[in-house]
Amino acid sequence: MKLAVIPGDGIGPEVVAEGLKVLTGVVPDVQTTDYDLGATRWHRTGELLPDSVLRELRGHDAILLGAVGDPTVPSGILERGLLLRIRFELDHHVNLRPSRLYPGVSGPLAGDQAIDLVVIREGTEGPYAGNGGLLRKDTPHEIATEISLNTYFGVERVVREAFRRAARRPRKHLTLVHKTNVLVHAGQLWSRVVEEVSMEFPDVSVAYCHIDAAMIYLVTDPGRFDVVVTDNLFGDILTDLAAAVSGGIGLAASGNLDPSGANPSMFEPVHGSAPDIAGAGVADPTATVLSIALLLDQQGLPEAARRVEAAVAFDLATRQPGSTGRTSAIGDRLAALASS
Ligand code: NAD
Ligand code: IPM
Ligand code: MN
Image 1 (spheres, protein in one colour):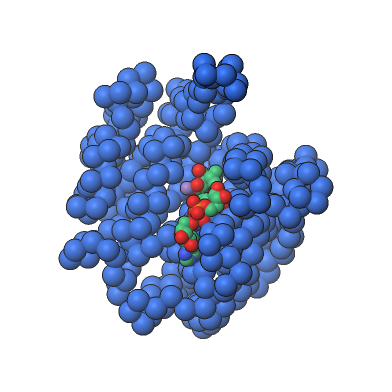
Image 2 (cartoon, rainbow, N blue to C red):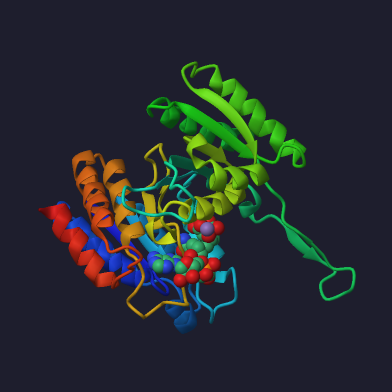
């Protein structure tokens, strides 16, 4: 496997190092190439993602990313110019974000309800398309717009992928999350596409939930969700809450997929560069390790993926209550468990 590695900023390099320990323990023939991208490179050279690097990334089987974003760089420069550019250029339209409350992990919810859901977040459209603008800047009449782009093509392909995944799960239930009561144009498109595609998946039951109510149910009744399909921005917000109720952001994994296989997919923890704890060696690398399991599945190595997940499950079940632990100690444990 040819793997491109972008450690990035803040805790990115710390968690990626542990993820690679686990990966190389379960798959011996991984050939990694490190790409030095992020705040340090931007300060040094002004570069975010040179075209030559993008070309090289395309030549890999997959990409592992830590996190990008740094307080010394204006907000959005690295996020848009590096991370979102990769997602857009490599057509990562399916952003896969599973959340599970593992046995032994206590979430913040009373009664520790069962949580086992998968968010399929659209990855290349919505307000992230970046076609807004500023008019009359620095005047009292300044106007800022962020236009949410929703194409039939883009919505249909991600909704179809969500149905495919729902059909393969025991509960076969799909929830569209949107805000059709206000965002009526995009809302109608999403609802109509879900209805259309549902005809091809008669075994999958379908529900709808407004994004605001979805925030209630994620906290009061998360068990109602199985597969959730939603747009780029709602999916971003929803998956941080889903992480928080499933043991914390330190456990939340993601894959940015181009299911057509035309481009390498990219795997990364849901969390960011966590400047507040960067360098302290206390970041939980489990989200990155679970992202490695998603990578192994996508690379057609399901047995290795299950070993990594089993290692995480065992480790979480036996961690001291409330303990966080050192990044490298958790990585060492997970690597030993997964490769034994
Ligand atoms: P964040 O996810 O970096 O941090 C939010 C909180 O979660 C912080 O308190 C942090 O300490 C904690 N946290 C995050 N990861 C953790 C881990 N592995 N173990 C333990 N605690 C962890 O979000 P933020 O503070 O909003 O953003 C910081 C920077 O990261 C910003 O520049 C933002 O744009 C960027 N960001 C990048 C990505 C990405 O690269 N995919 C994702 C989210 C945010
Ligand atoms: C995430 C992050 C990114 C997003 C940012 C950093 C661009 O929050 O991966 O969840 O909004 O997609
Ligand atoms: Mn996010």
